[in-house]
Image (tube, rainbow, N blue to C red; front, side):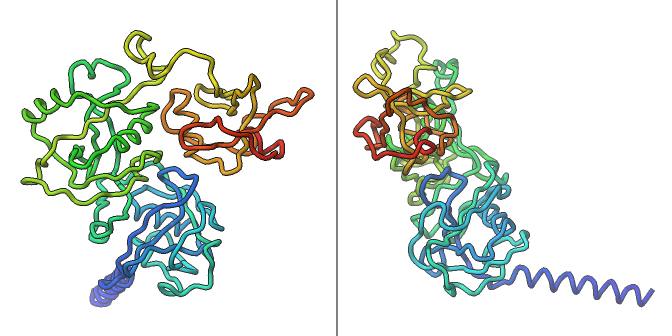
Length: 388
């Protein structure tokens, strides 16, 4: 039995050594985030915070295994794909990592072999991007020691919901008003309204398919909050109002909670304006927001409600929209104008069909501002570019 025991001891020692090698006690502390243009909340350019500075990762030798490590470090279950050549735009600052080789099982991108932090021969045209799965890791701890000290971190939670509180709201389908709650560590928590703005509410409403936000009557909610035990999430949120998801908003400063159960304000309430599809009747105040008049924007050629080629009515003539610089934010302008919420995807390349010219050229328009699609005609696009 002695040889067997010795062999077992050596095997255990080998496993212990491998474990220590994979998880060194002095491993570099880094933080990751997704950034860039034309993206959803679960995709973007990989940005890395190290030594007090945000930078990017080069696409040389990057692989789906490295993408898995990035996505899991951000709290997603796995990676769906990765993109080279700055698909999400060129980053700024240092290129922190180059020639990254991961086996896919590392707990941090910092543990993957690479040239060394800041050692790179790449340019920002080679910044790498990833697409993560929508599903979050249950119970994932998003707020680590690094993110607590970085004001530019994104909001990272497992899930977000709008929960109806008052009796009248609980009977309405869909829910258009209620507490904004986030799921953290497997538990639902309320947000403190200390620094909450209508721009934050606009993002929440868009996430749930509503084109706009409105003010609510706070009195009944204050009475309800006094009678219930509230479990607050300890951070504020900073949104510009153009984000497609709460996870793209910036994490605000930590809140001072009294006994970790309350704040100086009350729980955040978001009240959303339903579009045409959910307006109960024209007599309940929704006519003001969406007047029944000649539509100036329409979707054509789609198989589902809310999907189609974007067409614009100008001077009595329907025209299409060029896909140059077309992205999720521009598509969201159209969706909100049509009574929907945030756009789920911005299609390009004429994927939903082209319009017959029928003897004369259709007008082609571009997005002119964050609130209106109708402004001025664009340059001429190739036929396969024109129809979104």
